[in-house]
Length: 382
Image (tube, rainbow, N blue to C red; front, side, top):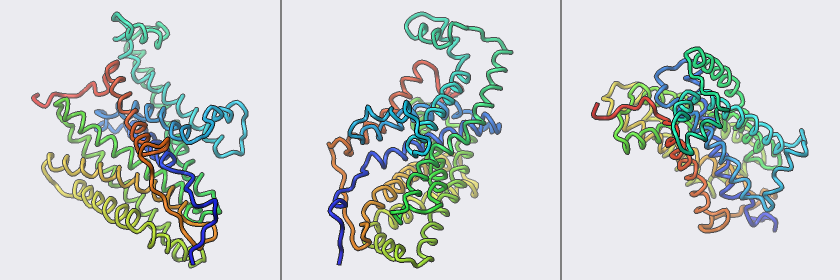
């Protein structure tokens, strides 16, 4: 007979807590792409290197917003910074987030310094803003640009482990909750890291094609092909780890394993088995395999890569949903389940989530008005 405790009828961590790891994943993935160019010299990624770095920064700005909306007293969130508590997981996030945000901001300053100098020579509020941002230092010599490049490479190298820590922390937060067998696994933080990289690559491919279409730019084939192959490789690892996690749970045949199998069969069959794995994992995996292994015309490769990127974004969102919401559907008694349907206009409803997720793209558009994020873009007519 199903039984749940009275305090488990309502799901506490809702849409905002689903959106939070989703946005932080985009941060980590976008930064990795930028680092592949700046640190490892992957020249084919140059067309999106600047955009990926700025995207990481902008998404990073909005990453804590879902958490703040979820809190009853959001103004108290800053207490973790002014009253340090080094054994608190949430406090640890504050330190990692702040360090990472500052590092990315400084790296952007060095990457875009030459462009800021050019804008600072003009007139108006934007020029004044750029002069203040540059501390009124408008030197733009070859030696200065070379020095900036060296600094960027060092910062990008430091940022790679910070990016992994930022999103690995989210998986650690769930995996360390031993009271919930759906979350309590040592693979959780590794799965979150790799799925984050995949989602960051996917959002770059998606955004690159959309912008190129609207602005009639020629898509760089080598860049897209390389991104697609990276997506395929990281996705293979991410999906393999997710399947290993389930196999590990089932193989142990513990009491918790039996209730988790029931949870999957009775509550998560559609969202987890059919959609996350059956549709939005298998299909893009096959599409990217075709793109990476079969010689095809560039237009076909571009179409398949874009479709795969959209499906991967849906797959990672489903993964976050099934982890966050799915883990709360299980009663602590292991004898029952609750249910959850998100609201539309609520404080933590669907509309709020859409607004938060859309806001970074608006900020990127404004940023592009100040400094071009695709300086090497070529018209499709060229």
